[in-house]
Length: 338
Image (tube, rainbow, N blue to C red; front, top):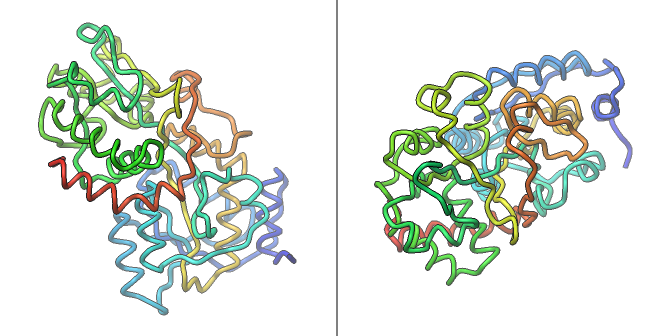
């Protein structure tokens, strides 16, 4: 495969060299709302000469917008959070398959779509947080959350939340649909309250005593260790955390990823941008700027993320997990997960 000047420029960035040989623009539709991502865009432009235009919105809204725009869509790249939304984008036909040796080499196979329509660029582990005073024997794996001894103790987000859907989808992939259904019913039976709020609210529930055990993504807690987060930072000593399933499949990982839009007017620039996101430089920005785990193993962890400790991550194929999303939603509805 011959590389265009745009891709060569991005490869140079990945290799750690400086080459500003391209021009033009790339249009990003992004549901990542983090100010720290600005450094990603400015450095890409500096390295390649490609101007980055960005439209922000919620993931599902951006997918619907791309569908409505059809062949006239200006979108070159869709960036969104969670495997479930990446799967919805693929199912909606708003992404296209691409051929990139750089992405194939740098992004682990389990963190990319089987048809190369999306690739993961940062991760968050979905782990347990618990009240160290009240919980002396926290659950050691996801399946244990359904144990009746934790009745009235567990907080989690709603069934409409992407993190919930993907967690259930991963349980289906690792343990089968029947076991996943029984597990989901057990978790519902153990709820301390009806699902409500975001991930930080689940951790706040531990602090307030409303919950004894909460499930949330690591970057919400790592952020609270780095900067002041009301209702969490002042009570860090009260909160224990645990990476589940370390003797089994490993901790479930949520993904932030991107793909090239189906009707991208600047396709080569879009591929170059994705390849830049896999560079060590960009991967370190993901970790330092938003307390996330890189997907490229050679990238350095930020101090806040490293403080969480080493752990075993679930290496399940997220492309296979994505195919389970409809079944996961069916299970959530069946067991009355609000």
